[in-house]
Length: 231
View 1 (cartoon, rainbow, N blue to C red):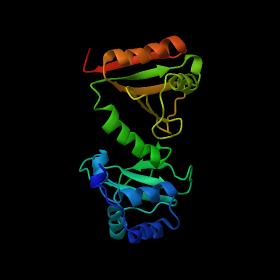
View 2: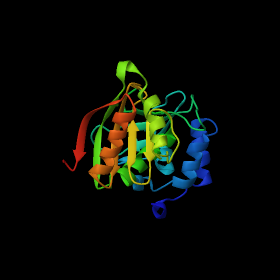
View 3: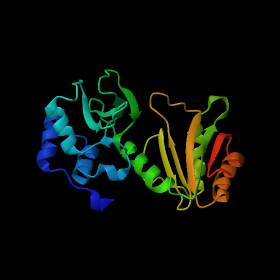
View 4: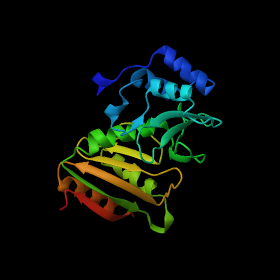
């Protein structure tokens, strides 16, 4: 994908900083330096995160002003477009939360705790997990409303899974070199007792092995399994 990426110019980054009203979070500035153009290679559909797209949108007056919010992605979809906004008023981890809203909407719905997790989730799902020969999705449910991640994370570490990109508790990405694990929960509905998941691997047996370890080593119940291809 790197061959399709182009850095945003320092001039464009400075323009975005003027629009934002101050210094950009380190993560966003790094992404602009690496990915000022070529975001379509990440597989994020009709969303345009390019620096020039953001600058042109603000120059046209296409993005309504919202205190503390910077539009960082315009949606080119004809039906139900949804832009992405960066919550600069609440920086976290050299980054900031990402919100979603329609072009005419004043209400923002939280989507990711950080931009880093939004990008990492797209790359991991589209270019690591989905190309796997076998996949399954479902949910892990903790008993009596307990924290499901507190039971799952130590087991995954013990089994040799590592996070390719560090994140918070709502966007989980794990890989052991054979099996890929992805989970996303909206900040609007964190549901700590439930972890929805997607798995990808070389065989149904590899995925069942992980599911079996969860069943025998934790108090988590596995629900709503759907296999691709159907078994």
